[in-house]
Length: 168
Image (cartoon, rainbow, N blue to C red):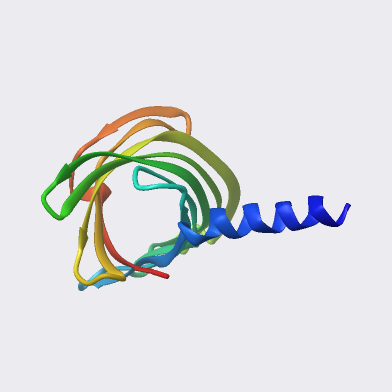
């Protein structure tokens, strides 16, 4: 029994010796004369090997239109990432993700409130560029999939996100 436990511990140490955890995410604030958006989407992940990772994004996205409406959503987005192309130091990847959102909205004109749940599944392409050994710049552009009852094929500024990851 002791040998079995020792072998299991040695196997776990061997697996984690090559593993890299990463933390990061995206934070954004946009405000103009009538609109405000606040996004806080921290992320944590685990590199299985050089090409595959698993992780999740958990955060909050809030929109406000002056004197008319506010909307917010708490989001959980687990994903599987596959790096399919290395271009010098940069890596192109695709995230197969599930999006689960708890939403709330408040119409300030009609004074009505609404809460709901939405979900989606899709693929989001991205690019990772290492800045240092442990710090990387990561961006996503677009997504393809089924979100909130509709099929989306989005490659535009609405789906452009940037962030940073710290690996340890």
